Amino acid sequence: MDLNAYLKHHLARVERALDHYLPDEETLPASLHKAMRYSVFAGGKRLRPVLMIAACETVGGDTASVLPAACAMEMIHTYSLIHDDLPAMDDDDFRRGRPTNHKVFGDAAAILAGDALLTEAFILLSNPNFAGSIPPQIRCQVIHTLARCAGSQGMVGGQVVDMESEGKEINFPTLEYIHTRKTGALMLAAIQAGGLIGGAGDEALASLTRYGEAAGLAFQIADDVLDVVGDQQVLGKNVGSDQARGKATYPALLGLDAARSRALELRDLAIEALDPFGDQADPLRGIAHYIVDRTC
Ligand code: GRG
Image (cartoon, rainbow, N blue to C red):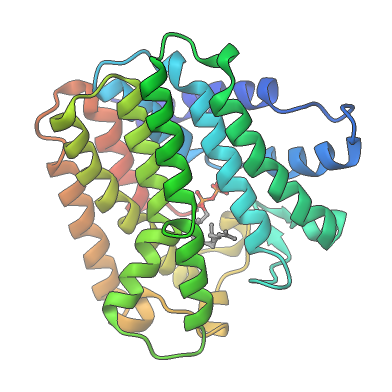
């Protein structure tokens, strides 16, 4: 299959859906909606929404029914990036190739744009007008999955332990704790939500979960590696920032070669988890390769 064409096609679908679901810039308060849209439409890869679509397709579901949840996922992800870039956290000036949200709109507006994006995600997820044919019980499970993975025992928890570990020597289990939550949790939620909406049974969901856990961790290791060897222009953000901040990363703990090998090992584990599925899982297989081979 042509993965680039697949990614491009679904990225365009997600962009259109995001534009449709997000309040427009004229809706009051206009300054808030402008700040929200600024970061959402700054050119992200839309990997989490595409993973959700691909997981739905893997279990034979209708990918159109996934779009509201896929957009909600991207709103949660974008909120986390806006907050992560704030001076109180990573204090970054560039994201997605543009000045960060707080650099353009100020700290208070950036905090509120992030808050509103997180809330908007759950407005969208729970909006009966966008429920389509998804049974109420499945919608509840999807909402619960996204909330759990984003919350204190998921992404936010991972971010807290990451911040508390800065400048300290940490052990391998702590590093895995951070990575599987800070980044892995949302990826896993995207895949599980796609499976649930697509009608996956317990066995299929378990296979997708194994894929999501391995692919999510591989993604963060690849991200750590890119922070060492990546091209700032291509990445659209500063490189070398992990080392400058004394951040816990795979290359710092294991060395660059071992970090790369671990990412490849996890990619293979992710692909192996898809063995029960046929050709419909090809997009997920392709994305597993893309996650470790990417340059941005
Ligand atoms: C502030 C609650 C809170 C959480 C922050 C997302 C996050 C947790 C921290 C971001 C730090 C970071 C750069 C982690 C590396 C992995 C990651 C999430 C990269 C950005 O995701 P991509 O590459 O970005 O999918 P795009 O812009 O393509 O969407």
